[in-house]
Image (cartoon, helix red, strand yellow):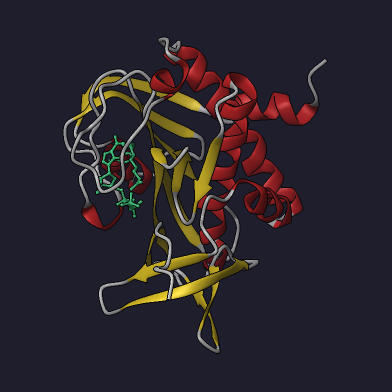
Length: 254
Ligand code: ATP
Ligand code: BTN
């Protein structure tokens, strides 16, 4: 028997599928600005200008799962950082349960399998001073596609991990069901469940090198804040990192 939560989870999404788009995030942004409802999902079989954080290129050939979901969460804008975590944890758990692949999460937005990047989440939003007008979660997961060669971290796909082709329609069913369930859970229960799950699934090492446009330093990872920020210690100072870039590398032994 399905619970009421599960039934609502299936109803949240309204899907449109395209053969080619430049970027599902870009396409959905126009719809969001014209008033499209929460739950609108855009899927592209192939993207010609897929993008990652900081406008980096996201390779999106046929065979992968490239999609964007539109949310209008009734939460303060300061909590928006929680959504990437909720979604990363939700996808990691769903893929583990369905395909038994050991998917981990790397703060703030990546999915990893055994030190290889499986996918990522790009959050874009528009807000007025107190309210999120729209939030787009763009999700890219390597499923059956050919992998890009020149990436900063080696890539992997579900089909590489499993040694067989995955049914992409089933992938979307599993992923969208989990995302709806955990998004609704976040809205009703708050962030704590995802924060706990994050600690179990995080692949960040204890010592990291942090890079931003202005600085580069090494730090110890202490945990995740109630707003989805990464809490680190730099020498004697404790700091919360929001959008700076965190690179997954061990500190050199001194
Ligand atoms: P990094 O992935 O280097 O740790 P990041 O997660 O902050 O950093 P993003 O901007 O979020 O990087 O993601 C874009 C990066 O992902 C690109 O610079 C490229 O190295 C890599 N990349 C691009 N396409 C793919 C893909 N299909 N699969 C895996 N990695 C990809
Ligand atoms: C990352 O930088 O790790 C996140 C990559 C997000 C890629 C997805 S693919 C669907 C959506 N459309 C885009 O142009 N980017 C996101």
